[in-house]
Image (cartoon, rainbow, N blue to C red; front, top):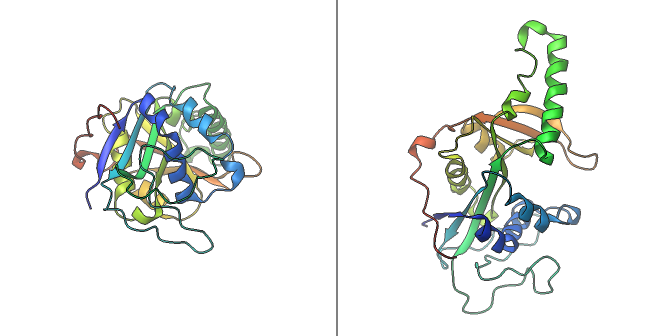
Length: 251
């Protein structure tokens, strides 16, 4: 099964937001409250400085049927680029029409340069400052100078989203997306947040060099705990990744 990694500019990314959210739904099975306003969030992120996005595509016919998970209805093994119905559309989640053509979206990722004024950046900076100050007060000799935790975000690339459809997980697609996304970046570090649990995603991040900066962290009272992770760039294994795919003229 051949995977093509395609880099997307902001306009191309925006035109595929419906498809990306469908992958997110299939991969994460989020509660409805996590979907509210998500299209607007992705659209806004595409305007951030240093934005980069990649899609992992398969030729139609290479896609296996979605593996069902306990208690979760399998998502359709598409959409093609030419149209995932938006959230709330009556046809959303239905099988593609007969004779559907075009590439299959197996996964996607995107990120951008982290900067003050961005919600995630400012929230994590505040939490890191409190965490490292508290740790230093308990055992001063074991911790570096004040601000060392916050320094992870001084010149950082924020990996905002990385999702792979369940049928394609465990095939190296997530790793390929992550290494290509961060390849050649000028930032000193990469940072991200993920569920604070032992998972395939957590093992992937550790395997390429990410370490825990915060654990058990809640962005809001109603959310599950997250781990905030950071890595110095380039990531481990980046040197063996093929050159990023050229951007297509259209998709």
